[in-house]
Amino acid sequence: MSRRAQGLMPWVWQRISALYLAFFLLYFLISLLSLDRFNYSEWTAWVSHPIHSITLFIAFLMLIVHAWIGMKDVIMDYIHTLFLRALVLMLVGLSLLVCLVWLARILIGIIL
Amino acid sequence: MRPNSTRPVFLNLLQIRFPPTALASIMHRLAGVLLVLSLPFLIYLLGLSLQNQQSYTTAIKIIQNPLVSFYLYSLLWAISHHFAAGIRYFLVDLDIFISKRSARVSAYVVIVIGILIPVLVFMGRLL
Image (tube, rainbow over all chains, first blue to last red; front, side, top):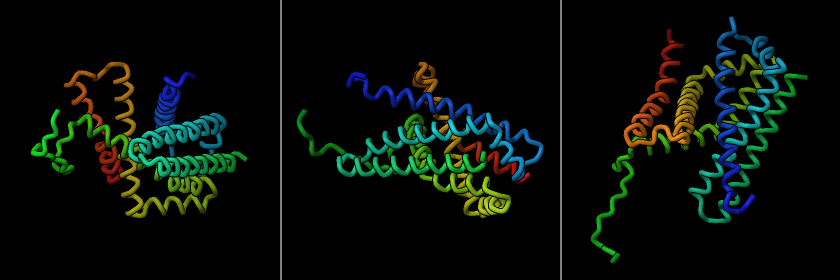
């Protein structure tokens, strides 16, 4: 991609992830609210249903992508010192990666 | 332009009027950052709720704590506002709400939706 269009891909991914998360959130709420009762076994059954596990995993991925793009924009707007900016970006990026691994482990734990 | 040292400077953030569009925008950012900073706690709760019956009960107990409950209601504001403002931005991308009047009105609607959802959920749970 040419240098002039450098910001285009994050812009596109911010919107793709936003759309996915918006529709998933609505489905998640409607689906859980339509359960007759809510307890531990209903909740784990919902999550371990294959369609839910897969869409949930994609939602976690999209969430981390969305969070990263948003945080990057905010950090670059407010932190101008190059060293500090790089440091904060790295810390936030690493933390989000840890969050993704953590989420994946929780999901794997419930499927297996 | 000549520098004018007598030019008044007024930067009192508490008194500068934010138009609703600017207010909705800064709240969208604030809500997003608040949600990201809350991720570790939310993931921790999710993990507890799925691990086993006992940890599920622990998770329920945690979210029933008044302070945690208040915090979660503020996160409900954050996600409601972020959601509504995000939809508004999608519509702005499609050249909807770009006249001055509709931009202001839609920004007010976004702010009200963000506040209304946690308030309605709170009142609904009281009934």
